[in-house]
Length: 169
Image (cartoon, rainbow, N blue to C red; front, side, top):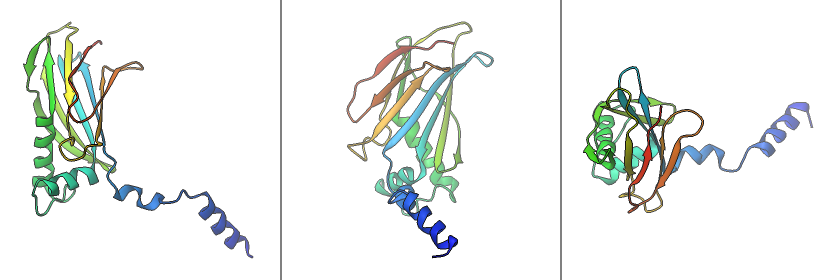
């Protein structure tokens, strides 16, 4: 066998089974980061959802041509859905963060929100992420509150109750 044949066999042996099809299946996980921006006095919220999951969810909700990459309307429809499924209170007051926008990076759709906060405040947040839990029972949503190396991390599944953490600088 030639060295090229050996190289091909070695590459095949080192490739995990199903690696090529992994991107085509629902990942059933969304990640949200909630952080304080002291320069703008805002709480910034970034939701990361796999594109395939988002498009599947839009089709499940009745969208005929769900194509988040090619259609700004599909992208915005899913972004609106995300903002409705993420609940936030700040120091006990229910807050509806402003929708800032969305973008596609790699295989993910990012949805951005923000809400003002008092200068110097260290607010107590209560959050609940139910993104896609109405679609899949096994959906898992992770929410990281704070920045740096030790954010508070919560994992939400369908029907879970809100969790609280202090948002530090």
